Image (cartoon, rainbow, N blue to C red; front, top):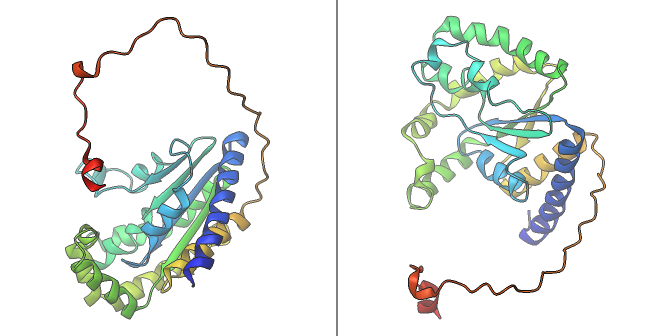
Length: 260
């Protein structure tokens, strides 16, 4: 997708996301957006574009670390439930409870019994969320094996993005078919009418971001909310206040001046 076309449409969509957020806040709606997919499929960069102009106190990103020893003894969904939105909030899950059907299963981090229990309970869990009024959207970012490897190789040589490449990411290259089978099985059990999987083709990252955001906006029947007009008051007349002398403060060095 051409950069100029992409940037123009992205800005338009981001403006609509602001309108959506105000509707969610005003109407007390609860929205959950799940981002899943292959490593290096573009989930994180899409989340960044979604939230770029949104109020972080209303639109929150949930990216949970590995469970603690205590959390491993809890019901699997318990720590994700704590992240669900209250009225007037949007939560974007940068990976979610679907870790169990993906990386945990493929990398032998859960038992076969835990895996089967997840596939049984997950549709029930999501039906409860939707039944309770939560707007749930699940996006799967699909990337080809060749494009994934290309993105991994670019991260190896990019010091600004090396943190994105973990040993587990590297191993996913050799387990491509294992992850494919796990994804297919996951879809069989969890692609349900109440919360279907929405596949985003993401070999072209720009196109993927535009398609995902446009679909999210189209799938939620929001309306513009009139905000009360704001007027800035006149600044009151000075009363004699004098600023503390700069010599008594520690100022940050003017690094910018050295660049001019």
